[in-house]
Amino acid sequence: MPPAYAAMLAAGGGVVAMQGEAIAGYAMLDADKQEVEAVFVDPARAGLGIGKRLLAALEQLAGGRGIVRLHLSASLNAEPFYRAAGFVALRAEAYAHPSGISLASVAMEKALATA
Image 1 (cartoon, rainbow, N blue to C red):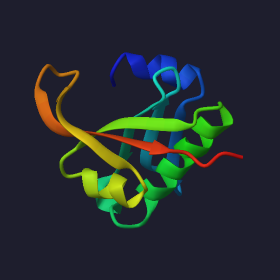
Image 2 (image 1 turned 135 degrees about the vertical axis):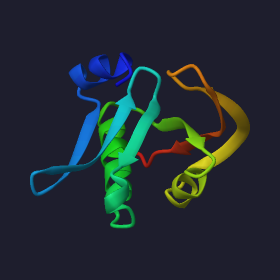
Image 3 (image 1 turned 180 degrees about the vertical axis):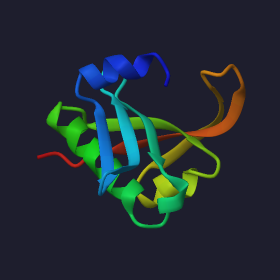
C-alpha cells in the first residue's frame, strides 16, 4: 500500500466495496489534490458494476467537500472505463508508479455536478 493511502484513509477518502465478508474492491480520493488516486476491483468480480459504484461514491465524497473538478491518471486499459463515467482525456503522460516504474497513462478530468 502506498504510504500516502494512510493519510487519505485518515481524512475519510477511502471507500470499500464488500460482497458478503469479502472485499470486492476499493477506491481512494486525494481531496487535497482533487484527484482520484485509485479504483481497484477484484478481477474475479469484474463486470459487476462495482467499479462504477466505487467511482460514484468518490464523486459524492468529493462533491461533499466542495470539489467541483476531479483529476486522475488512467492506465491505458482503464481509460475507456473513466471515459464512460464522464471523464475527458487531456493528454498522454507517464505515470510514476510507487514501485519506481513509469507507466503510459492518460491525464483525465471531470467536472462534477453542483448542488
